[in-house]
Length: 549
Image (tube, rainbow, N blue to C red; front, side, top):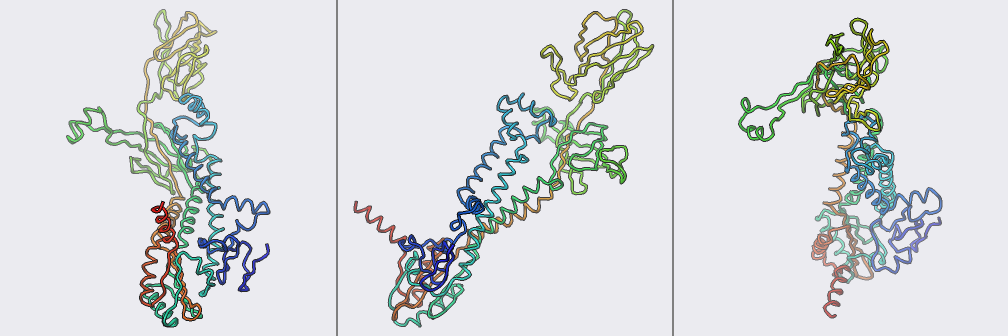
């Protein structure tokens, strides 16, 4: 792109609106306009200059404020949709059963919700892509504006062309008694008002609070840091938020903490009682019936030995014993394990007795582990009971077959094959807790004797290495907000005209009232000419025209 040569001889980059040296308007639109747009000092922005290559088009796309707002709206809308149904983290089923869970509870909309990835929204590829696009938009839009703004403010000249002065919102011109004396007194007063004053060739450039112009870009930097921390959460090791349900007596690998294992030594729950506790709880206890005073899980922490293979629980080393209580987590190696939930009295095992119906003679008892049942159990006198089918959470007959609605042993049912010396071919029997079905009249039956229960602890494993990055991003963001909200960039140009004439112009990015008050103080002290605020003049003319009509 060819450069634009101003009448003052300075060569400006293509797309410049106001000359970088003297401030003359360089475009037809700027020449015809009564006031100039000073947001970026009339400097050339890349997005408004280069539009040929694919890189230019990508740059221009992401530098658009409309595109940035559209991406923000898309992120907000998808985040809102993600709250309609529970996220994967709060669903009490395995990953393999998620689709069935959403379909069973929420029907057709649940299926769509699951297939589109809204069930695990913050880890979905499209949400991460949206966050990445938002970060890209913020970076490109900021760079597209801050670099030319910085160059323009750094290179700004003290003396400006009269056409630049006339196109400012606040402008005044008029004769004074002594131009040099007025210039000196104006410089003195402006310094008292804490302006940085630069005098050159009978002209003054007074400026203060330039740093406030960088507020939005500091703000954007904080947002970029914040979004970077969110994206880092997708990298293994930076962020862990997992749920573990562990039964009493179990030893399981800790999800999200490879090489570490936890053993549930026992779960304890204490409830408030009207007799023993304060009267404050008596009303609540009478209304609710039971209120938990404390619940905790006593655990042992282990880690892999140096020569252990991943997932091998036989070769692990003891680390420590600890009690996980609400708000008092187990901490190790940057991880925290919290007590979040519990389930009482889950069935652990069931004991049956094989008897002959006619004589009620027992052929022995067998105990079934409901989590890991054996295929067959050998009893006395050569009797064998085989488990042909196992339904942990029996939910009736569907399509002619027994159905289990979950893998949790809430309502166990079995299909037994009972083999005895008298019946070597075996007899089939369907046995549930309160139900027994036989395809034909059997000579033997499996009687339910007893059940053993145990409690389950719901633990949450968390590790967040991005927390301090998020905090730092938030602090930077608030600094930018304060910087741009509570200060404003003010500039006042005062220079000699023809003879004893003085030209006065000023600009601020906001709070024009405060700027006018300071100009009036300088005007009174240095005997400067009257000025005109174009916006106030236009408002008055509009009001007068309205009154006339």
